[in-house]
Each structure stands twice: as structure tokens, then as C-alpha cells.
Image (cartoon, rainbow, N blue to C red):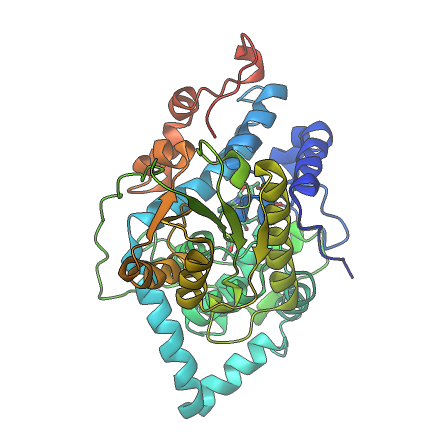
Length: 419
Ligand SMILES: Cc1cc2nc3c(=O)[nH]c(=O)nc-3n(C[C@H](O)[C@H](O)[C@H](O)COP(=O)(O)OP(=O)(O)OC[C@H]3O[C@@H](n4cnc5c(N)ncnc54)[C@H](O)[C@@H]3O)c2cc1C
């Protein structure tokens, strides 16, 4: 079976360079094929690096468009924008995440009192449904921490419309095992398949489509549902205004906190040098249930790599925390180093943001301020992610211009801009 991809920025950058040089030109034609775990050169496999910001979306777009025109790389660029869209949309609809978290906790408790649900759920997550493709994807996910995008769509569709299991438990299963597990992309993709994100529009997995795009490795025939009635929900999730980006305070010593949300601290919009650096993990907070080994290992490696680079870059000491009790951890760290401020890359909606919100109150009582720095890339694009993706998609050329990202056939000179 596949080994875990190396969780480092260098590995992400070299994967990006080789994908752009060798595979990008075939991407739009071949990307929908899932040839199996041993044959993945038709997609970039960059998602775990992008998710933890070991490499930045902006760098991916820059590198792509330095070599390719926008029209020839359009599909790939649009996929990167899907990610940014989901991040921005969730940031402006945080109640969706709060509701999801509460549902997962409730449903996991309900497993103890509902024997039927418990058995059907156990069959699904152990790969014992008898639907060959689905059971194989369960094993692949657990072993590698990755599934092809098309397999994720088929899987979620079968989970919801054939197995008739709650979508939240499926999203939780993915989130616990994916090495690119992301609160926004994962939760909103599951909602999209269920017909909750684009209201009334579901994604139905069709046997002939699975057979064709798995290169005939699978054909579930009559074993999967042939209709997909959209799920409904009574709650309405309001649009919340984006908070103003915070700025780096100029007074006093600050400590730099590195989390799994931003593994590129050396190019955060920071002037000067932190006094010290701390790497902290929140991986176990993904779910009340256990998180898979590949996801745990990749995240740990990503934060350790980010910490190593940041300590070198700023030439200061750093340490990797072992505890996930951030209230005490951050307060003790601030006291130990006499910090007035803790600075970290902005943590979008998700467990890290939850942990920071809890720690913030604790820190304030001790006179320590917590500052989250948002990247210009997010500040430019997120305001466009209030409604459907296609509204943002139509603005991609405009947004690229705003970010000063020019495509190969339009480049006048080389430049470096804010990331
Ligand atoms: C049910 C479901 C759950 C998903 N959960 C996650 C998740 O937790 N984390 C995650 O990063 N992606 C998630 N995706 C999106 C997508 O499947 C993966 O990003 C993609 O398969 C990663 O492989 P790749 O890097 O080779 O992608 P490529 O096809 O090479 O795409 C390049 C990059 O674009 C972004 N991207 C591509 N497709 C999507 C998409 N549909 N939505 C958002 N971003 C996209 C990723 O950052 C990806 O690395 C999910 C999709 C579905 C249907």
C-alpha cells in the first residue's frame, strides 16, 4: 500500500513543480478518472499540503500561471478556487459548523441507544456493506488517508442515498481519516452531495459512471440507489459579516504560534522577529471518535516541519507542544517567556479556531493578547464567497488581477506580491 506523503513544504513544492511540468496539460481531460491508489498522476495530490498551508493557494496559482495560460489551466485553477470558496463561505456561515459539530456529537451518542443505526454504521465504516466499490474505498481511506475526488462524491452519495445513513456521520468519518481533512471543504462537500448546500440539488452516484471513471475496476450495478431526493433541514444559517483582519501589534514581545492551519509562518505578514515560537496540535479535536493514523501523522509532521522552518527563518528557539489543552498551554507559555502578545496565522472556522477562542478568554485574564493574521489572499477572495461557487468562478480573472497574478501569456515582468 501507499506510504504517507512526506509532510514537508519541500515535498509539497517539488510535487507542485512536477505536476505543473508533467501532468497539468492533461488535467482537464483526465482528472475525473480514479485509476486506483497506484495510479494518481492525473491529479495533483497537493491537497494535504494546501490544506495545512505548507504550500499556499497563491503559490499554486502563481506557479501554474507562470507556465500556462489561464485558458489552458482553467480547470485546475477553478479547483483551487473551489477550496478558497468553501473556506470563505464557511467563514461567513459559521453556524453550519456549530450545527454539524453538535449533530455529530448527538449522533455518536445515539449509536448506543439505536441498535439498527449502530449496525448499519458499523457495516459502513468497517467496509462490510457488500457494495464492492464502497468497501474498497473504506479500506483505501483508512490505509492511505486519501480518496480521489470522484470517489469521495460517489462514496458520500452511496452513504446518504443507498445506505441512508446520516450525512454528518459520513462527514465525520472522512474528517477523521483524510490527510487533507478540512472543516470547510469536507463539511460543505457532504452538504453539497446531500442537496443542502445548493438547496434541492443532489449528487447521485450512477453505476455506469463509476464503471467508466474507475477504468472498469468497479461496477456496483443494481446495488446502489437510482434516485437521490434532496435532504432538508429546518434551520436557516445566516450570513455573518467577515471580521476585520487583525494587525500585528507594535508594542512588546510576541510569541509566534504555529498550528495545523498555517504551516508557512515565515511568510505571514510579520515585521520583526518573534521572541519564541510554539507549535501546537489540535488533531484529536476533529471528532469525539479516534482520528486515523495517516491524518495524525501527516498533521504532526506538517506542524513539526513548519516549526523547524520558522525557527530557522527567525533564528529563535521553538518547541512543539505535546498537549492539546491550549488554555493552560498558551497561558503557561506566555508566562514563561513574558509575552504580551501571541501571534498566529488566522485560523478559519474549525477545531483550531474553537481552541483559540477558548484560550483567548484565559489569556485576556492574564493580560495576554491573541492576534490572528489573515493573509491578503483570503481577504481578497473571501468576500466573493457569500453565495454559490459560480458567482466566484465568474470573477476568477478579476480576482487574479486584484491579486496581481498574471497568466503566462499575459506576463510582462516577474514580480513578487503579498501572499
Ligand atoms: C465528500 C467530499 C469531501 C471532501 N473533503 C475534502 C477535504 O476534507 N479536504 C480537501 O482538501 N478537499 C476535500 N474534498 C475536495 C477534493 O476531493 C479534494 O480536494 C481533492 O480530491 C484532492 O486531491 P488533489 O489534490 O489531487 O486535487 P486536484 O484535482 O489536483 O485539485 C487541486 C487542488 O484544488 C483543491 N480542490 C480540488 N477539488 C476540490 C473540491 N471539490 N473542493 C475543494 N477543493 C478542491 C484542493 O486543494 C486540491 O489539492 C472533498 C470532496 C468531496 C466530494
